[in-house]
Picture 1 (cartoon, rainbow, N blue to C red):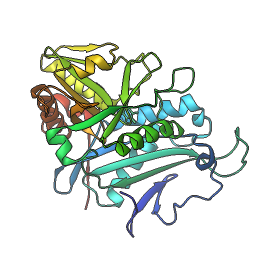
Picture 2: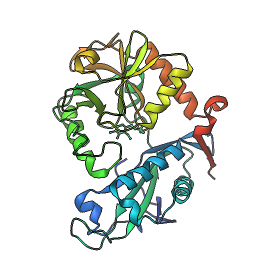
Picture 3: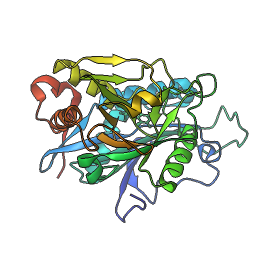
Picture 4: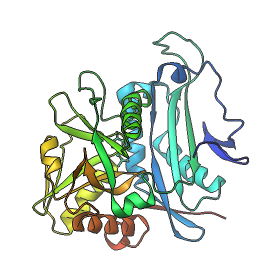
Length: 314
Ligand SMILES: Cc1ncc(COP(=O)(O)O)c(C=O)c1O
């Protein structure tokens, strides 16, 4: 999605308004310095006119935590319930029974000094239709990744557990570098050379039938899809291990895949020119992918129905 078609509605500070009315003043503080918190949430159609937002409560909780980490919570007037209802309202206002939600909490215009502790804090929620982030072909046959020359900054530099807008400069540079060198996605190392995450996804590998992923103690985002896949795998009797590993283990893994709200469960068929496993989607990846899609589309409600927030559109 690059432009907003006419008629798009946006939730802004408690009200649904047109995208035109929601335009930002050019002295918006967050636009200049990058301090804002955001989320990416998906809703899936369960039948025509009825959608389900996946793990909405967990996304709003992480948004609130990002606000706490960045002190945006000090001026935030909107409660968890307001933002939850705002997400539903944004989808309904645009008649979307599936789509992507983008809540952003940001520092509005006022003082232009860096600290600007008294500027108003605003909240905006946009919604739009978004297909497979890394492509349908990627979901089926796997994507090609490179290890980025850009590192994930350490814990003393950035707050990796928070989704802070300005931190995505690092991801954009890595993604652009990967694309410019003919790859689909970038995987970033930390200062010690361990795998952290991709530009907007967590990383998993399959080793001897076990799922292995970096632990939360490392500088990675606590991905909600990561948690979902770990839970689904355990419930299926697949062993999961959270530990640090470097690029050599990734090159030799039986399977590699990425997880994220946008990317869902995307297989990786190549890293730095090395074929991974059979060079296409691996069997365990496929199993995780199938179970993930069944879950988000409301076909596993016996086990995972508590992760879905249903809503209707007319
Ligand atoms: C840097 C980064 N890592 C991981 C993820 C995956 O997180 P989630 O599964 O909650 O979407 C995202 C996407 O939000 C991300 O931006």
